[in-house]
Length: 282
Length: 66
Length: 218
Image (cartoon, rainbow over the protein chains, first blue to last red):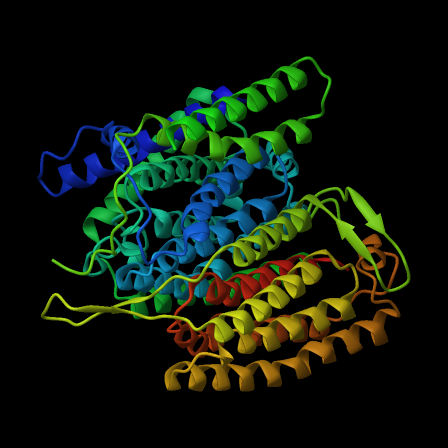
């Protein structure tokens, strides 16, 4: 399982590289090679590193450990078919991790990025909860139960299409250069990660790689079901490319608009959940 | 710094490896193995990076603008 | 219960001091614990303010007395969140949630900035009024099912929980610091001193995560 963990991290970084390449080609730029994000992580890990003089030292370093730790836990939960709620909890905790990354250094840019991450959490998290609407169909929130249910009744992508859209928006919110990536907007230099450089940034890259793999694989398991490993890989690449298209052709929203649009979708999801609930109850 | 990072790397690597071997042999359940890896993997990764990085710099104030 | 947060590892049934650990609640509990330990260990950040247009910058210092009070409040907040994560009793859950609201105001109350004070006051008003639906929900739970134990509710032998009780519970938790009432809370993050203000957002998001599980029981 340790080899899988390392491979998942590298594969996630490769997906982020593909994401950058596709965006660049759509915008008629050559773009970096697809393995650029892996090289990035390696490059940062070799650099001279220190902790900023104004930083809260224990938090500054500790949060990098927490960031990698929570996604390692999420990886195990996903691999063993554990509770979807745990993955959801870890996704939420990632918001706090971004918040802590931004606030721990004393930098004003990081601080704004961190505050934006908490504000967007207010709209993203209810969006993720709306995926719980699928529990009305499957009667369970355990991934293995949901996979088993799909083997009998067919993929949830068709049966609970609006829930898939909500989860897709969650994925989109987590992709860099997307319409909802307000936490790392260029007016904030690099947002919450401005002051985490060198080894700390390499640690963050490891977390990002793992996070990308876990979220995309969870999406596939949740809405398509268990697939052979090569089909999983192909499916994840296809989802990444579709996300890249969305990111390439949409501008980044202002923080206010980003929260409004996500809240709007949450409202629609609540209506959908209500309809499903009444349909199931009737 | 580099010396302690190297030690931490060795400890982390050995604990992950031991947990994997014990789980593979069926001596410990999966959740114990997972708990060990979740606790040991992040420090191991950071220790690896701190061990092979170029060197420690003098601490500075945060970036305040171009 | 096993289909929501996983199979419970451990249940302590001791009157209304009901505690249980499922994979879900134990994850949340451990994270509250990790951040509380970080609060105890860290020294506060020194927030940098830039004088735009020049090379000048200032850093904010936090006085020792202020730091002590804020650290105490953050640890109290961490303990309240940990309690809310592991309790198996609806009333205890509402009690811990109300305590999280109070300590959140306390964390920033010592900051000498009018913006922060104002935001804390406004947030305090919302949190105060949110306790009415919160405790109301616990009352409706007790009145309609005759039990406040989440273990009993999850067994499915009790009468169904009315939807109004669940709605009141969610409104109460949301009032303690989620989406539409969040504006005042974001202002509170103007306060310098990183590990302490992080507890404000962490605690309210944790109780929100827990309430998702609670409303699915029964």
